[in-house]
Image 1 (tube, helix red, strand yellow):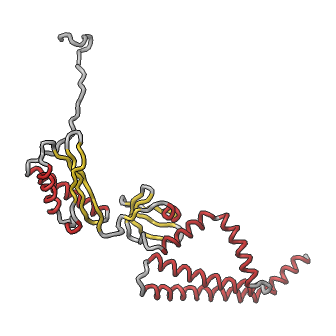
Image 2: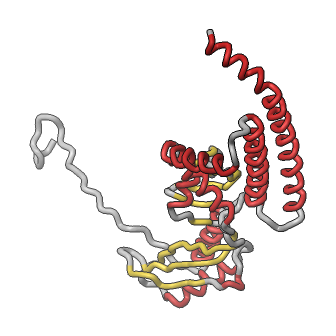
Image 3: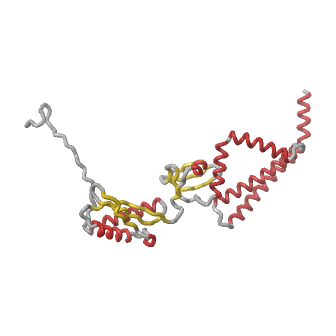
Length: 282
């Protein structure tokens, strides 16, 4: 009973301090909202990436909340000092760091991804066999919309540790296709026909050049490697390749140049009526 009375007395004594601490928390929430809106207004006038702007707003809000909570704790527990609080937070941070290692790893990776210039929202990337469009970057995870429409939530540590190929880093990238012609074809003539066909495709950028290389002697054809520059998105690449292949096929047909196909041998078994031996007349 004495202990309960002491606890009740202590709680009543702390009520004014708790009320002041609650007011401080409310004021902190209001200031954090104002500070975030001011930071958003300032960064909105710059050319910063959306992900980096989000990081700045998060840091401002977190800093305001940390200061406000420290003040509220000192009001409730007057014996605490800023130094003791920082020391306690340091020890607690180490313990929490070991317990939530993966979470902090993704958090730090998210900060570094937002700071670096590459991989912006809207880029099409390829990582660990996954291809998709970056839709949203948070401090813990990145949302990637696959080309088939599904959304994949990827931890930031995966994108930070593994190689990421950014397909849309530039407006254009190089595409290629292999075309084979028969052995009795004049290769110089075939190369010229292919060049004119590719040049006539609207999506192809002629200023960056069109490469046509006689690549190798295949089993039934001499293969040309055809390379050109077009849009960097997957769909732009597929559309340009479709039109290039159609144009090359049409031009080679008009020039009378054959596109051979590999000769496939088939082994046929003699069909013998039941009860007879092979070679006997039915």
